[in-house]
Image 1 (cartoon, rainbow, N blue to C red):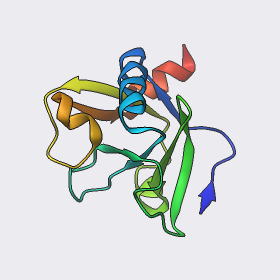
Image 2: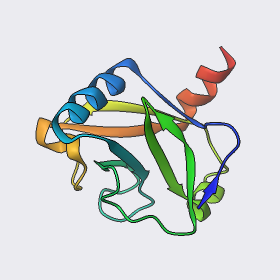
Image 3: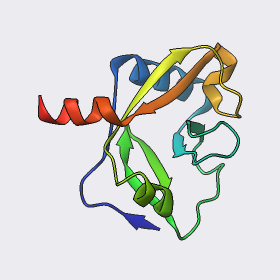
Image 4: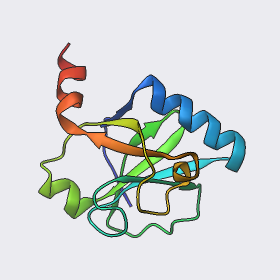
Length: 118
């Protein structure tokens, strides 16, 4: 598993709040940025260790103490963005934990560029 030297994931306050609620319900968590299967290209939240990582998975950093991974090839196709993790109303179509609360996590690369330059 490859790791980047500088974290490239940040989160909004509402995303951090939802992570806290999910951690209280499920224990330690992990995230994986989906590259097209399951829930499109949405970040997916799992109990830590539930998703088996492969040798091509890259650690972008941590969000509120939770590791956040992406497939290295997907990361390169997206030009290695810095991502902002957000939460929005409405359940996604995948198996991410927040869906039971009628919420979905999403990432935004454009907002990340502004967050790092402001």
